[in-house]
Every structure is written in C-alpha cells, then in structure tokens.
Amino acid sequence: MAEASLIRTYADRDAERALFRTVHEVAVGYAGVEVSQVFDVLRRRLVGVPGLDDHGLRRIAEEISVGRDPSGL
Image (cartoon, rainbow, N blue to C red; front, side):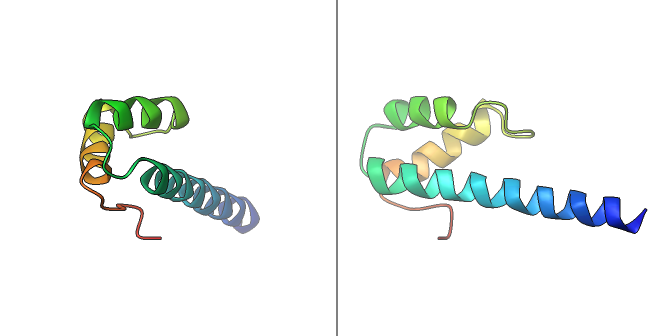
C-alpha cells in the first residue's frame, strides 16, 4: 500500500516538473509575444493537463507576454 502511494507521489512530482519545464521553455521562447500567440502555443504543448483550463492558460500566457516566467525556473 505504501509503495503504491510512493509511486503516485513520484509520478505526480514528475508530471509537475514536466509542466513547469514546458511553461519555462515557452516563456523563454515567447517572452514579449502577443498573448493570443503564447496562448496557442501553451494550448498545443499542454494538452490534457488535469486542472489546467483555458482561463489558467490565458493567465500564464499573459505573464509570458509581458516577459515574466511564471514557472519559477
């Protein structure tokens, strides 16, 4: 039982790292670009991420558009 929980914890951590890494890559490559373009890139790159809807993607895109990296990396 504890082993299954630990495996889920590692899987969740790995998924979160992948999410932040992707956001960071987009932030580096698209800083200063129009929000709609950044949004489109994020939407393509982050397909199927649980809990991340269009509103969340738009907020991230807005941050990247003004030159911020919301990933924290």
